[in-house]
Length: 154
Image (tube, rainbow, N blue to C red; front, side, top):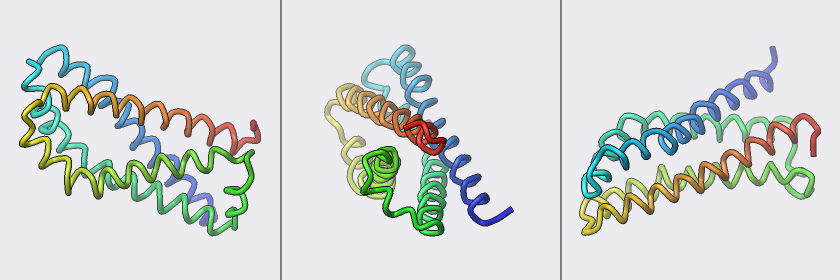
């Protein structure tokens, strides 16, 4: 087995765990909180649950980024970013960038403090739920594009 194969295995598992976690949070945890908690308590309950997943998401996102970069660098695939047929390369990169900025910059430096002192937690929960749905949809599109594109579909 060569280093590229190992990088691809790491990449696929990291994306599976990362996006699978986002899907679980978006389609199971958030609806359960909306259904079972009072509107004013949803945001606090979400943050309590999220603390168990946050460190895992950071690890998976770092592994996905490192392995993706390694594969592009190792096989000199930089030219794909200039070819419209490889739109899915940009899709993967942009989804990864959004999560990286969110997990490592926005959440720890701004969002957690802002939401902890929120005068409208129910509104913040609704916004967060909407943002999760949008980023999950973008992640699914990027994943479909990447799997199809890496097998010559596009």
